[in-house]
Image (cartoon, rainbow, N blue to C red; front, top):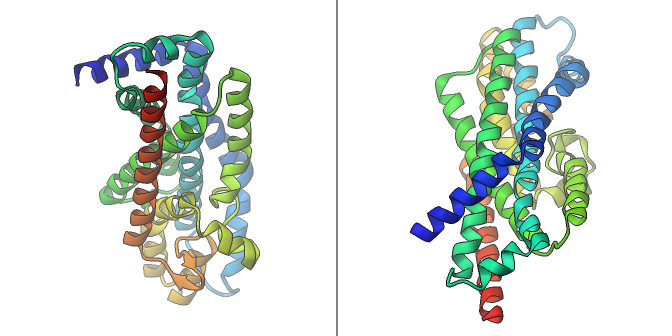
Length: 299
């Protein structure tokens, strides 16, 4: 345990010591928040208004709270994974500098080394993601606050699980990379594509039936839906309490993937947690096993 603690401390210290990497990781979610609020806020609001029939009175403040919840959930769904790839760059840097080989030649177990990278990357990513979450909540408090304390706790738990998943995914992929150019290329691909396939940029309900079925097998889809439910759920309840028919509210939930379907069967929230948690544990197990087998070959 002492060896693992030393490795974790070393990796975290190196990450925060690299000011360029740290500030890039920190500022990316904040830039996304500004871009979402500036360019996508009106788009999201118009999409909701299209669902509401003419003659139905709506509270603009509640609608703003719903839009803010969608913005925050989209931000967290993307940044928790993409920032993990950035913070996990140290693994590749150690390969480039030869530090990874030097450590592997010591009595440190391969599984311990792998966990050291994983926990350090998770810690750095979680700190940045919580900062992004706080900024998003401040934004929502300005435009329309309808989030309860329990919602905030669930959002924090969702972020925790999604960061664990994102760190595990980046760890497995980074295992095969050997240059900084490769990790930059992979990071660019993940940053540009992940938001679409997880439903953060465009709701899954807006995709064709074939694509919907395909992305329903991806864990990130369920993570996005969990964040949607906890960022927007109370605002939707307030919307219904204000007199908007429940059928319309339910249609709005379907539009933004609060209600998620697997082959036309609605997926319950506990099942979403089960899918996300199982996927994270599977990736962590694969990552540790790959490093263990590698250390055996070296010795």
